[in-house]
Every structure is written in C-alpha cells, then in structure tokens.
Length: 485
Image (cartoon, rainbow, N blue to C red; front, side, top):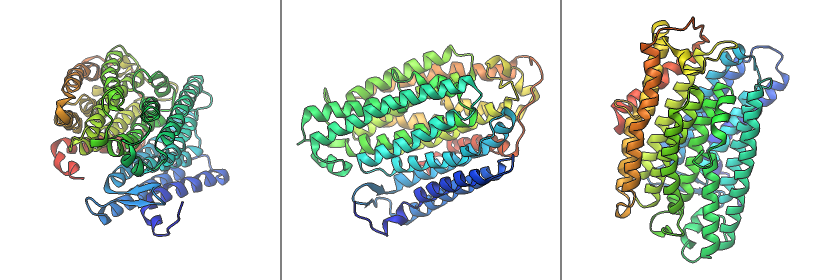
C-alpha cells in the first residue's frame, strides 16, 4: 500500500474517532472518580468533532467527485461523509444515554465510552471502503466493540447470554465473509472493489457466484435478516439499553453502508450478474422473507425490546429492497437508502431513549402493560415514543413515511420493473406493522396506570428524547433538503 500524506486529510473523521477512543480507554485506566459523566462528555465531543470534520469534507468535495485513497483501499466521496456524519451523531447520542442508565442499573463501566468510539471508527471504514480487505477490517473493528459492550453489565446473566450468542453468531458470519472474499479473489485476482467492477464478466463464474453468495449470507447475519436473525431478539433484550440503541441504529446502518459499496455500487448496474448466479437473486428472497417474518414475530411480543428487535428485522428487509433497486440500476436507490438510514437511526435512538427513561432501578419496565397510563403521568415521554413509533410504522408526517415511500419508489424504478412484487409485499407488511406499534400507543394513552413510574431522570437523556422526535418530524415535513444530500 502506498502512503500519501495528502490522503490523511480525507480520513480525518476516522482518525478523530480512533484516537479519541484510544485516549478514552487510557483515561479510564487512570480515572479515580466514581462518576463517569466526564468521560461521557469527552465521548460526545469526540463523536461530534468527527461529524463536523465529515461535514467540512463533504462541502470540500464536489457533488460527483470521488478520490481513491491508499492504493484503492478507501474512497472519499459525499456518500461516505454523509454516513460518517450519521455514525458520529449516533455515537454521541449513545454516549448521552449511558451515564444515567449506568448509575441507576449498576453497570458504571468507563471503558464503554472508548470502545463506543472505536466501534464507530470501524463503521467509518465501512462507509469509505473500496477494498474487500478494508471491508473485513471495518466489520471486525465494529463487531468486536459491540460484542464487548453487550456484556458490560457483568452481573446480568441475561446480558452474558446475549453477548455469548451475539459473539458466536458473529464469529460464524465472519467465517462466511472471509471465505467468500477469498473465493472472489480467486475468481478475479484482486480485492480492489474498483477493479472487481471491471472484471466481473471475465472472472471465474463459479467461484464468483459462490463467493458472492457467501458474502450475502455473512452480511445477512450482521443486519439480522431472516433466517440469520436468531441472535437479534436475545441480544437486544439482554444488552444494556444504550448498547441496544447503538446496536440497532448504528450497526445496521454501517452494515448497509458496506453493502451499498460492495453490491449496489461496485457489483451492480450493467455488470450485475443477475439471474441464477446474481447476488440480487438470493437478496430479493431474503428481503421478502425478512419483512414478513419480522412483522409476524413482532405482533406476538409483549416485551418492548424484543418487539423493537423484530421490528428492526423487518426494517432490514425494507432496506434490502432499496439495495436491490440500487444494484438493478435505479437512480433513486442510493438517496432513498441514505434517507432511510438517517430516519431509521434517529427514530431508533429516540425510541430506546424513552425505554431507558421509563425504566428504573431493578425494574426496567420492558413489558408493554407496564407502560399503561404513561401519557397521564409522563405526557412528554409518551408523546416522544408515539412520534418514534409512528415513524417506524411509516405514518405521515414523519421521516419514516417518506423513507419507506422513497425506497419502494426506487424499487418500482428498477430495471424492467423486476421488483414490483417485492414492493407489494413491503407495502402490505408496512400496513401490518401499524398494529403492533399502535398497541403501545393505545396502552400509553387509553389504559389505566398500573402503579407509580419513577423514571430515570437525566438532562442528557431528556435531550435525546426531545431531539430525535423533532428531527424525524422535520424530516417528514421537509424531506427534500435531506434527499439533496
């Protein structure tokens, strides 16, 4: 790999996150105080600094300008910087959620903040990946950090079980990913995604097909697509709520950032080996099954975390629809996907912020019936949760409505209208999802309280609860600005 000092400017967001994460881990080693609020503040500063640098680089590059860095290992373009800015914001929100939750639920662990930023740095690698090796490094940097954060509530048996399941399934998916990449390299002779794009037609078709299918399966694990979703409900329920929020929002967005690079951009369009041997063939099936099974399973859940877990599985299916549309040449596929990722990530963070707020010491109140009468006792929290649930269900005038609308529209614009049947399945399931989202709303507003709710009070937590619903409402009222990104 050739080193060019000028390339360092374009990976500044990654460097900010990585160096901040390392410094925070070192700071924890020498920190003597019991309160970790100062570390949370430094984490927010590091994450938002990365976001600011990403915005500056976004403005520095032209609308269609793209720069290959470090001998085609990374790529600098506006798509990458929009996603990098998103990862910085989500990491900052996850840091704001943590101090009060740690204090109340007894898992005051300072390493959380450094590992959070290091995991976010792996996500930046995925957003800017231009090589299979970079994709692998990004996936592992992100995943190892999230495995560790899932198990940070050390005295929780459920948390330890969740972390073990997540780790074992993640290791299994890593084997699929690495072996698939090895087969693609054997078929084409390079790991550079730019060169792979030009050699798809001339490569060894058998090795390329098997390798591509194995990479699809590996990423299906990461995004919890059916039938590779088994770990998600247990991991979401067992992990501390701030970690669950980060896992549901940022990890899924980062995995799709890598898939957009690999499949939608470099292995899509006119060179897409579509049909029996194309990656879109298994992916459309995964999308249809994932949307349907996720919704059906969510209807049966009484635990809010598990319901949101199955909801996120269904949303992964909708995102796969947009990815297939992008790979099949839909011009609106990429902006629709990015808009969806922004809306979904902020909505998820807002919803889990309310979950963290409602829970108190020794009683997280994860059962839906525990939220009865919340609107009477805590109307602000109920309103915030309602806006987030309406956005997840795709109801106007929230960002979630336009997110689904633009994804399904991009699918209808795909080559030869091959995805019309998939669009119909997505629309039907979106209507079904309204049922279990409104179930929580009706419980909060139309059922009598079952007892006192002593929430987890925190200015930072309240800020996330207010900011996220307001942004998703603004995205629904003024979507054009976000799409122009």
